[in-house]
Amino acid sequence: MNENPEKVKAGSQEAAEGETASQNVEPTNPTLDNPDQAKTQTTKPLTQKPEDKPFQVFIRDDLLPDIHQALTQRGLQVSTMELIQGERPVVGGTCWMVFGAMAPDRHFWLCFASDSITSKKTISLAESGTDPSLLEPFLIDEKKITLKLLRSRLMQRLNGQKWLGAN
Figure (tube, rainbow, N blue to C red):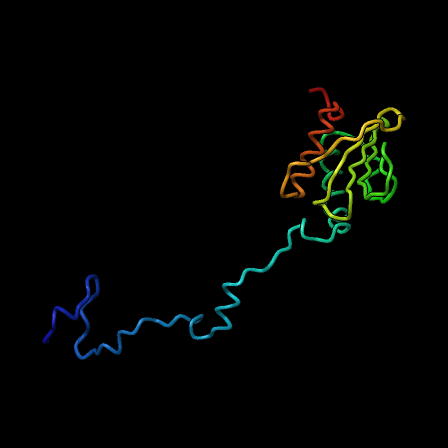
């Protein structure tokens, strides 16, 4: 056997007698042989963020159930949770609102200036059968509005009103 040490790579086993370099070919990568297969394996399925949905779909399919669940997990009885378009509490003017009613006779209105979750938002609260008397800005400094942010800040505001229990 006449072997040239320069041809033997570090960590490789000695080639059998008569074996040529062409027989030491590494296994082929099936994704390189078929570009379509490579494309489907590397492309992740596109998942739409809830916030990218149209306004009404996002509110009805994602925000309302999420808020309802968060409130019931805190032991509150939610009697109404809906998206309505109507007269804004306190100051008037038509807007989209998430209206929520809970026992014992508590109501909130999360108002959107237009049919976009990034539009200006306000919140009003009313207790014990009274009409709302104060309209507060809601999420005015946030650049990116998400489902999680809307839910958490609404829960934070209701907790500040002591509707979620003693602070």
